[in-house]
Image 1 (cartoon, rainbow over the protein chains, first blue to last red):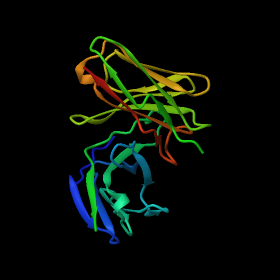
Image 2: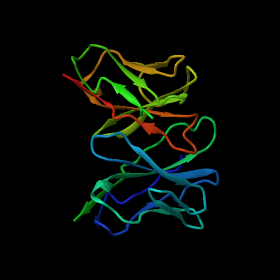
Image 3: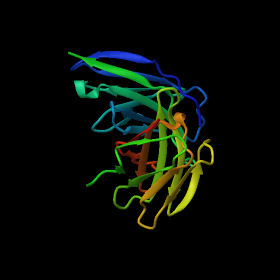
Amino acid sequence: DAKTTQPPSMDCAEGRAANLPCNHSTISGNEYVYWYRQIHSQGPQYIIHGLKNNETNEMASLIITEDRKSSTLILPHATLRDTAVYYCIVRGHTGTASKLTFGTGTRLQVTL
Amino acid sequence: KAGVTQTPRYLIKTRGQQVTLSCSPISGHRSVSWYQQTPGQGLQFLFEYFSETQRNKGNFPGRFSGRQFSNSRSEMNVSTLELGDSALYLCASSLQDGFNYGYTFGSGTRLTVV
């Protein structure tokens, strides 16, 4: 699986959009970008994933650049409950690609 | 619907002992994966079971083993515990491969080895 690079920490004011970047310059054509987050003392939570088109769900939006070498997770209106470590993961969809390779993630702190 | 249930939540064991952790996946989920989380190494994949067969394995010593039952419930076992095995052990389940809807994680079992 391709390696990802994320900033170690970010701050965001409550109510503002949180934009979390991720670099995955070695991503291959059949690899997807997944985002998970882990709130303190809980297991990771799936947020969203995409291949090359922008994706949106009830939790967030995912913007993937045209060359697919980087992406941005957008939380449109961050709340205190969004304070967590956010992991960007690249994985293929082949039958044996069942594991998730977590990096160090970005610790997002949402403040009043 | 009920989430992924891991038992026990906390466990204290002595070096050299063995331990068994349990995971009940979401009803209908056939894939169960296990992860170890430590402050130094972060989240690391242990193994994955699908329909009672180990489908993928991480880079852990043979002291770490697991199994899955016909009802998809899974157990992992760690024998001859070492201090470094102290960690949060997380279980994740998915319908098949976690591709379209991701994996659902439990809250974990925190193991302390003394």
